[in-house]
Image 1: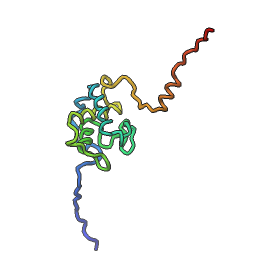
Image 2 (image 1 turned 135 degrees about the vertical axis):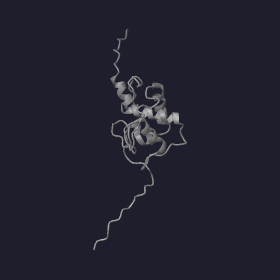
Image 3 (image 1 turned 30 degrees about the vertical axis):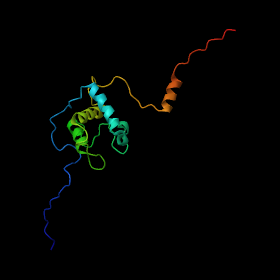
Image 4 (image 1 turned 180 degrees about the vertical axis):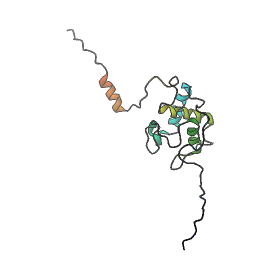
Length: 152
């Protein structure tokens, strides 16, 4: 005779799971329409070495931030929670280390990388990381001045 099936409960160490498990009522962050705050978020992104894992948004050890496939959600509240609480497998918790207003600026910048910021608040210029190699390429593309003949 087979043993009777018993119901077991699974205890979880953390209450985090991929995808939103609740309805988010806030659809905009406090700095989504503020170009200065988005610029400050970019500065903070570099100062807190987010580039070390996210490689300026293109992904590395951490997931890319320039696409539209975000495991834990791309709405401002979810991004804020990810930064504050951290996520399994590498994302550290920044709670108590970064003030809330700076986290919201990071949220605005991170969302702007994937085109989720307001067009009014986005920078009109294209910022690239310049290396010696790219500077040399730019020099090659500059128009050359015609040489003038030397008078004797």
